[in-house]
Length: 520
Image (cartoon, rainbow, N blue to C red):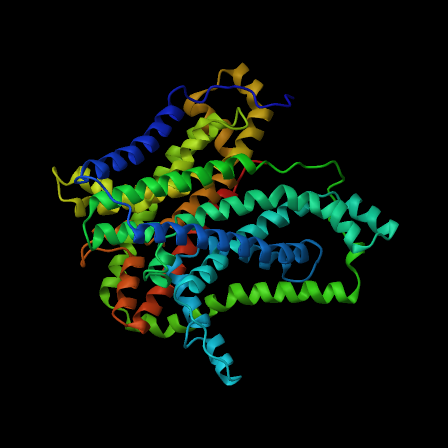
């Protein structure tokens, strides 16, 4: 059996065509916005302040997320307890959780009238200040600390059980175990996790829109929204979009460069037992970190559930039509994602890295609001842009999820090419037949997971649609945001619960399809 991926033919033109669609969507939008700029564009003090705040909050968010994740991942990696599998699974929930729903839960827990502030008031302290930098950091850590934890747990799981057995037999102190066994894992995983979270926080919009704002807490993404929505200053929006693309694009390429695949060392694949971590003090410390992380992640969800049950009966009829709209947007995004991700991932499966993977990062680096604004300008001379608001929203959601989907699909495709490349070539399988008979059955779990991730992210996205949707035609996240803005908190809580249920249901259905009848 071949040890390296074999260059079998999937399609000669599918991957370049898919990459071309990504490039055209982004560059055409950027060109359209820049073409409408009137005269010279000045990058004023407010714009420099937005750039500084964007970089500062992304740096702090990534730092806090990774630093918090290290002791949590270490505790999960060396402890076995009832419910551990469920807790590790729940660590993936914030990544697919609609941002606007999480924000409502965070406000219920950490806001001025939230549970934590009420507890502080009983102790004689001032309530927490949730708006501004503090709120943005809390929300970003809530979303990204679980991602860093999963990456670190995966890294520690790659260490053979025999290494921990050896250090236990030798009776090495914890500092030596950390330096010789655990530090190499951290050195390999932490830089890539930090860079990835940094890029994600650079392009965050909904968090800044709901918890940021104000002259001292405005990100570039929020400044683009303000320049277009309130000032209709396309020149400033174009300049900010170029800065966003340069900063986030450079950070994304850096993340791609320093995020190497994990090196799986030789071992018997046993579940590691940590003889070096059996003291009462170490057990208590691990318990503390696990309980703290679980409370930090679960309390906002509990708050959403508690408030949403009573708010379901106070929602206006527009919420249900908005939910149906969100479902159609998510379905369109998922279908488009599969059409783009499969050929690109198949092309990359024959090589370690390539230009196509850099192309996928453009969707993560470019401002979603810039893309939406550009296509609004392109469509306007020929049709009503509001008619195309939802298709453009779905396409932008696809671009945002594309880098993650390609990364999810790559390992399975590489393994399929390694195992079945020569046989498929000998049988003359290529094109649709190759995908149907060989590839899809063997990457079905990864494909279902990627599709579920895209559907969940799309159904809960609050981005491009904020620019163009009219009051009578909106997605569920936008309708929920409008209810929050009009202080109809009960109805907004009901909409949040409905949105949470939709996101989890769509993810579960796609993921269950992938795991069911998957080829071994």
